[in-house]
Length: 241
Ligand SMILES: *Cc1c(COP(=O)(O)O)cnc(C)c1O
Image (cartoon, rainbow, N blue to C red; front, side, top):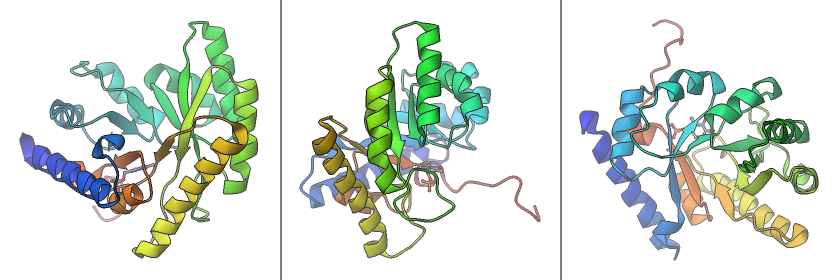
């Protein structure tokens, strides 16, 4: 495969299995989202042809809009929106993505519900609630204490949204203890919400290139990985280039 992507995918899969086994988990219980922001269609197709990728994850509606319509459909891999979604792009997002993992307000959830109702196709949208577990101001997502009221409102008023779990971006830290604490807090939150609201919200989308093994040890069921699969991202607009 071109550019060693195949080798990188194998290596990520091995590390995922290693982390799962080390914590007594079944490696089959952790899905791999290939995060494809800034990557070309060719790079994405090459990665998907490895057969080891469960989902494509894009951050921005605009970027997905340039890519997905040209997608040859070489695979049936579903696309997930993993970045912040503005309400005015909700309709477009519904046409481009199979799941939205970044629900962070009731306004957004009810906008998606309303559009799905209008479209009347009986489509159920899988979603996750994004939680800010690090307290960092730059991070999206609701505060942990806001997750229960948000989830309860979604369950009560958005029957066309199926909340499968919680998503978080780990703290900007190299300290294992700090990062794992944040991931553990998401797992604890999921367990308590499942109990209190009597719903099965099994998924925990957490772990990126720099911290996915810690996330798996803390119970992640879905890791979102970009650079470890595709190589470092070149930021075109960075100054001085
Ligand atoms: C970019 C991004 C990732 C993947 O980041 P890498 O460090 O390249 O693995 C995962 N999740 C979100 C929300 C992202 O924006």
